[in-house]
Every structure is written in structure tokens, then in C-alpha cells.
Length: 491
Image (cartoon, rainbow, N blue to C red):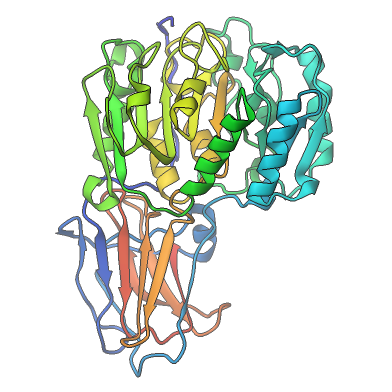
């Protein structure tokens, strides 16, 4: 990997992500009794905080986040309700019916994978696009070969299809562009991949315009894509099974961010103004509550982790990562390494990112050609992990985290969603208390809790100015929840 000696860093503008810093669970208690207007204290990782509340449009766009402390609490008076209230959760990620599946009919394994995935994820058959890729199969295809395939996909899919799953492993690139980025953004000619603007800001990530979008095709006219790679059907089955097993498990685990002996490939975990690097790993850790999120994050000065049994996030910076098989990776786990050719699958002159999946990881990433050491071409953990934690699917979280994705290959089970939609709720009929736990709150963002007697409103503020200092799980407790509907709205 060559160093990027005159880097032009594209600002990570407006990247708002739901994730959980390490801090204790934030409990927001709305006056145990009384009428609207009463107040109560809320604790955020042990320290008081005051802020809260989104609105309808904001909720739908950014996802409801509850994980802060409030300064004004209101509880509905009167007897406990006879029926449980409904907590209206915002949209935080894609549904199976919104995923398109691309199958290469000239590749028997691709056909098998597509059939398995459609059945196991309940994807509509109308979302399956049958293609005939050039034979014989190889690592790459030309833009001329790719263009009619892209046109076929665009013509076949309905507007509600927001993203794509690719069910073959080769070809993995179109000239110098990854196959996932080519289907998502279109194919562009990239000459010298270290200097050509098309490898950088010339092929921008559409999420940069609206990083919290959960409808990328509707919002940008682009469908992010992810490959489900395999060399055998059993490998594909295992990967798909891990993604499904991850769903809504709200796992506790570890996040290991490595500052290795390879200073160049540790770019994400190193501060180097000369090369325009920011310490993205430290930024993530500073924003994360390890206790409250249940995910212990550490910046580790070593070449690898060994024998860990709870790996959920793993950020690496080596050409080839040792000891992968000694660790146990939780369903939905993410791991990748910043190196030149990790996106060459299933094998590479360096270590292929596919090796992470073979070790038991559910999602990974790598570049298909020499990218030079630009942080912007690799996943930013300070964006990736909070987004995933906050209810996004694997494909959404990964795509949001790469500023310049043209050369990057996104790998894994696209719909894996360990934290579900980022909300869990329970109602205690004996006390009339509604309890909501959420991972979606963005630190420093203000939210409002609202209630109404009809789903269409009008909604009134129950507690305002709710915020959290770090990404964490937040518990919202609403005693005497006598209204029929509640929601959390981003202001």
C-alpha cells in the first residue's frame, strides 16, 4: 500500500449515527405519578443531563433516539390504562421487501445462493434479477460488458427496492471499480487510483448528502450493494444463517480497534497531520459508552487479538491478520483490515477480506485495487459502529461509513440487524408504566417525548430536551402512561 502524500480529506459532513459509547444505561424516568408538568431527574452515565425530543419528519429521517437526561417530566394522571399503549418507533433500516437480489444464471453457485437467500429472508421473487455475466468468469469485467447489465437491473426493479445483494463472488470489479460500487453508483473510468479524482471525491458516497437516509434509492436514485461471497454453498448458508441469527439479539461483546506494528495500515487508529489522518478509532471510543452500550471498546497496541470469545467489532491494520480462527465472533460481527487488496475475493496476494467471513464474521470490506492510504476509502468506525448499533442493517451501516467507496467491495449478509430497529418496549399493566429501551440516540442531539390519544395526533410534549453524552442504551420509563400512543421525536 502506497502512502497518500498529498491527501485531500473529504470532511465527514453531517454524519449522524446511532451507536453506543461505553457508559451506563441512561434511565429517563417520567414523574412516577401526577399530572402533566411535573418534573423528575434523569441520569446520563451517572451525570445529569437535559435535552430531548424529535419530531415526526425528523424521527422518520434520523431515527428516534432516547438515551438522555431530561429536565421536565410529565406523567399522565389517572388510573392505569386498561390496554397497553403503543410506542411508535421510527424507521431505522431496510426491510427484506426492499432488497433486490442479483443472480448470475451462468454461475450455479450464484443460483443456489440466491435461492437460499430469497427463501430465508422472505424476499419477494419480483426483486430477483437474473443476469447472464460474461463467460468465462474472471476477477474483472470491462465497463462495456457491465453497462448493459446495470441497465437491466435498473429496468427490472421497482422503485421501492432500495438496495442490492449480489450472489456471486467473481467478477468482483469493473475495471478499477468494485462490483458493489459499480451497481450502486455506476461505472466510472479510474486511471491512477491514487491520484484520479474519480477514485476520490469524483465518485462521492450518496449518503454524504443525507447520512441518516433509510431509503437510498428514493432519496438519491442509488442502491447500495453488498456481495454475499462464497466458494461453497455451505459457506453461503453459514453466512446467511449468521446474519439471521444476529437479528434483534442486542448482543453484549467487544470492539477491538488495533494500532498495529504497521503504521501505514493503522491509519484509522493514528493521528498524522502530515498525511491528513485523524484518529477515527479514538473518536469512536471517545463517543462510546462501553458500560451502557454493553460493548466494551478498546484501542489496542498489538498486531491481533487472540482467544476472545465475544468479538462484535474488529478494526485491523495489517496485510494479513493472524489468529483469526482463535476468536469467537458473535452473529452479526463486523471485521475488516485497511490494506491494498482486501477486496480481491476469494483470494488475494494479501489477505482477502473473505478470510474474515470464513472465520465467522458476518460483514467485511476491502478495496479491489491499490487505493493508497486514504482513510476516506475505508470504513470509519466512528460512523460504522454507531449506525449499526442504532438499528441500521449491515449494508446501510457499512455504506454510510465510507466517504470514497468507488474501489471498495462491501461483503456480508446485507440485512443482518443485531439491534433490530433500535427500540424495545414493555408495559407493566399493574402500574401502568411503559418502558422503552433504545440504542438510537445520537450524542448531543435533542429529542422530545410525546404522547397522543390517536396515532395521527395531536401529540403533546411529555418530556422535552432529552439528550445523551455518548452512544449507549437508554431506558425511558413513563409511569401512568394513560395515552394510547407515544413517540420520541428528534428536534
